[in-house]
Amino acid sequence: MSDLEKTSVRLITVAGPPSCGKTSVILRTVEPMIARGLKIGVVKFDCLTSEDHHRYSDAGIPVKKGLAGGLCPDHFFIANIEQALEWGKKSGFDLLTIESAGLCNRCSPHIRTVLAVCVVDQLSGVHTPRKIGPMLKSADVVVLTKGDIVSQAEREVFAFRVRQVNARAAVLPVNGLTGQGNLLLQKHFQNAPAISSLKDFKLRFTMPAALCSYCLGETRIGPDCQIGNVKTMDFS
Amino acid sequence: MLDQKVSTLIKERPYLLDFFTAMAITVPRDQTSLKEFLTSISTTHLTEFSLDHQSLTEQCLDFLKQMETFSLQPQSSITEVTIKAGRDKNGDLEPSDVVLKVGEVVAVVGPTGSGKSRLLADIECLAQKDTPSGRQVLLDGEVPDEKKRLSGDQQLVAQLSQNMNFVMDLSVGAFVRMHAESRLVSDIDSRIHQIFCTAVELAGEPFTLETPVTALSGGQSRALMIADVACLSASPIVLIDEIENAGVDRRRALELLIKEEKMVLMATHDPLLALSADRRLVIGNGGIQAILATDREERRILSELVEIDKRLAGMRDLIRKGNRLSS
Image 1 (spheres, helix red, strand yellow):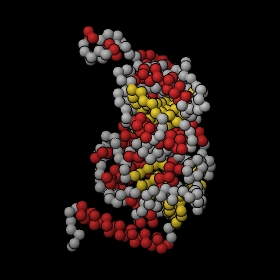
Image 2: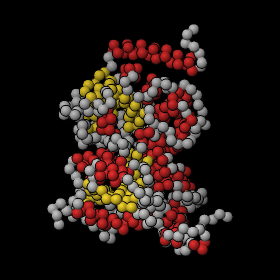
Image 3: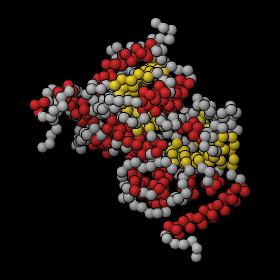
Image 4: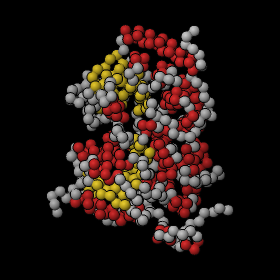
């Protein structure tokens, strides 16, 4: 065990639709914390490609990238989360942020007792909070981005709609470009529960039901090719 | 709550209907109690929203509770915001505390990078000597509750800036209705009428309740935003960031915000607006360097500026209508 190794790390899962500003929000939020002497690392989970890890390493933040490729990104995420935590402990981080993007709206990477943050972009329209589902519904903190270019009325409606689906969460507007609003988010980050092991921890929501032939690589269309858990629509 | 009839609950709390509609659940209009109704929803349907009966019940009650506290809060209960002096980038103490009161207009002046955004950010996050400036914000003379601060429930500052747009594809009427509904106001129709009439008056160029918000001209959108913020926004402070010249009666806009008991902060270098304010905060080197009250000579200059502005507006109108300025 090296001297810098730690027995626990404050762990945070940050989720949100693609391009909503997760990386910018995380960067603006952790930069002042790093300046105060905290050691912070990031693990970035994505589906196919991601260039965001360069933005972290350019900022001098240790980062690991995980691409799910052909796998369901959520299954990939959960199968790697313990290793991520081990990396965080070994690296001596005070805080480890897990950023996951591009997961389908059906999913949520949030884990019970681990601080759960959901980032939503206010430009995406006021119906978005209802469409996002579990990753918003089960979050502890909801961060609203891109509010500087949307009318005040729409921002108020947006925050209201977020509370409609998640009445318990803190709802914080943060500007990912200027960092305005990040102070309160920093405070949430700093108070995140420290985790020493994720063994026997549970996801806040179930993974999507899967295991049809398409999950296994089938590309042909037609009832003969659909085996397993298949649901059909009613067009009558 | 669980034993009450769903139909009665919805009548008293229309927002509950929205809660279920969002999950594609049809609400019964008969004698069913909330509890019976919640249990009657099929497990399969709930699974689609990653819920079960227990979590649905919890969420429903949480929502009702939150909306209750929300609607009990008056439009803006805060009448005074104090910004206790902090320090500029050199560590020099600001000249004095700044107290903002409802119905007051304060201009904020200083070049780009002087620290205007920093001041605003301090107010927005209710700084408690924990920001680089070391300022502290008090609400009605008291330190705000830290838990409430972290929840983000209290958004102190409503913003009006040049960069803002409407992104929704709705008519003016539907747009204001949606905002009014989210603010849980009781007299929605009269509120829509009030905002609409005010906006048209401010804009000069008429539009209708059926006009899509995205089809409004720059001046019309700005006018609608101002009227909406004055009459519906939950935030006691309104920050105005350089409202452009064209299309909006800016002095009328200020009068409206004062009448609606807002505290107005205005980042502007336009002499007409800056002198309309009661005071102006001079920002430099990351801190407030001076606080200037508009003096008697400046008030005299202001009345001249008002005349010049009227003349300019008249000429603008002539040009718009295709006339010559030469007679």
